[in-house]
Structure formats: C-alpha cells, structure tokens
Image (cartoon, rainbow, N blue to C red; front, top):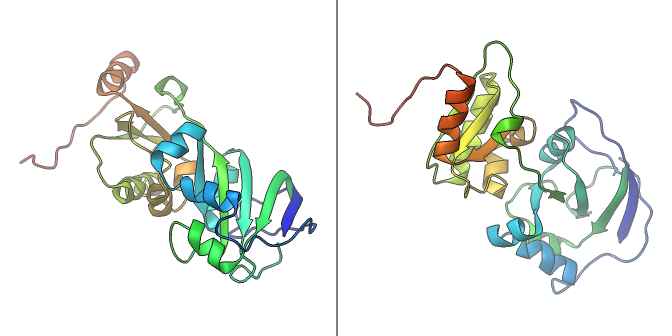
Length: 216
C-alpha cells in the first residue's frame, strides 16, 4: 500500500495520526528496492553519503518534526501500528508487511513506524544563547548510546546545547536518537574540532568549567 498524504502535526503530543489514500499494494518482499534502501541506511557511511537518517517510533518522529527536520518518507506496518493514521504533505508513505518492517527496523518496540529524514548540521557560529549560557562540551564519546544519554540529560538540565569535539561523530546514529529520546532534534547539537571549540570559547569569552573522569 503506497500512501500519499498531507503534513500536519501537533506540538506536545505523543502520537501521530495519518489520513491516507491507498495507491497500490503493501510491500511484502524484503527484496523490494525500497526495503533494501532503508536497510542500507543502517550503515553510517550510507547515511552520510545520502545525507539522511532513520527515526523510529512515534515520539521521536514528532520531535524531529518539531525540530524542523524535513521528512523524506515514512514506512508503516499495519500489523504493528494499529492507530488511525494524521496528514503529511509531499511525503511518500509506504505500508509494509511485518516481515519487511522487521528487516528495516533498527530496534524493537518502535510502534511500527519508521521515517527517513533529511539531515541538517549546525556550526558553532549558528549557536544561540542568552545572558547565562550553558553548554555541555564532550570529547571522545565512543558509544552512541552514551552520547544520546548526555543529550537527554542536557535537555533535562536546561542546557543551551551540546558541543561534541569530534567532527567524525555520527550524531544521527539510531542509538543516539533512541537514547536521547528524540531530544537531539529539539536541542542544539554541534560537532567541531577541538581547535574550533577552543577558538569559539576564546572569541565568545563564555565562562567554562573543565571536568575530567580521572581528576582527583
């Protein structure tokens, strides 16, 4: 079932509803080109090359929309997601079998909804802050899940954003998104080199405190 619908979403809700028109049959084959494409997006190199990323789960999709990310397409598994599907304009929505969904899903328990969004990247110069700026700066965070937890904590603590001292960090890794519970889309998150971050603090004269895990 291929679905073509119009976009609308409500803020401060934990669900998305989609009114759709059935255009063709459900994707049942795991060999379908669309299924193979989404499956390929599990790889960091492919996501970066195509400048897109995956978002699984209703709450995370809503946060991405609230954060101004452009939606590419959505995959819905009617066997899992049984709610009435809200309007998405200029968006392709594909209905897939449970077998296909399990093939493209990165994790379990995502409500039968998976979306592909276009990535966007902030620079240090684009960061905004008020009279009492509060940024969390991290370096060499190896596990994506840990980075997502830091972003979620930064959101809960009211930080202006998170600065990551590594341009190679994949902030759109599915595990980062999952652990951040979608706050990566509503919080300022920037990757930069150590030297660029040093210059940023030097030029802006922002107050800072340095912490080290082995400090005594």
